[in-house]
Image (cartoon, rainbow, N blue to C red; front, side):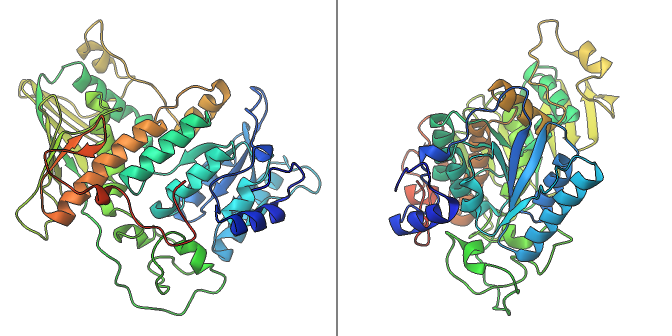
Length: 441
């Protein structure tokens, strides 16, 4: 691939297609330089469905960034996002004469822009790794929605690429920026509940293979690019709803594109369990199956400290210690100590939390806004509250749990080497096939 500094976006795309490298190796001439501490970040958005649009809305009022480009394979979503950006800046009277928000069908055009410092990725899960790796290779800092990776191998490749390019990478497991979860983790981490031998982590079930019937293709949708590395199949509106979706699309329930609720919500609740016990760079040692091959819950996993986590139906996390019990969810917190209910409300500013923690307590990273934390980390070139390694480890917990549901077999895992041990598992489960010409760099 040429590295000519005069390479423009159209030439780059043509060259990349011919070279067969598609989105994964960008020439050094288009790498973004580290952002000056006092400058405004130029940000691009890739994936403007329900979640991406929500993130866009949260970023538009900010004075520390400027959304300069959006990318989506759906014309309706892409144009609505462009209009949303331009309307917001005009209303706020922050537009410069003639300034517009660029809109691209192909994310590679957005990444080829030298003026973009960072990108927000909110595509279906099966695209996360390929786009994120392309982004960090292009010198962009990244905010990537959770679950960070579709497979274990993808997650490790994302960590490797982010580290090699010295990029700031925030994963959208934003419960780490919520006070009730931080308070819960500090109570567990500091032994307030005593020895916690059992945790119930409640989210809905695993995904299934896609068997949806063919429908007439949505006008203005680049279906081939929506599928990307996933197997070729006919269009169905359940996967990519017509127009702008009012609800979250259901592609996540199908194995080709997502990990079901085990990955979707597990990347929140299982992530908090990891945080509570200090396993942000590690993970469970063993997974236990359930007898029912159609089970939607019941898989268990065990950590080195002996704690056993059970995937339950419902939503929320319950820690069971020999001194007390704690239930936490978004906006919900219930703490019992010695059989007495101590609190229905708590966050990391609570006087009761300070009272319960020992004087030499371990205090966890405090973020009150996930996007603000990302921007702050970009400015200072420091690790954000849900770094790429953390996101990889939490996604791995989810992915391995799904493998137990899929296979009906128990697994033993070496989290340091990220391999199955003692004759369990199959290394092929850790990756997937990619439809040509897409591949994992």
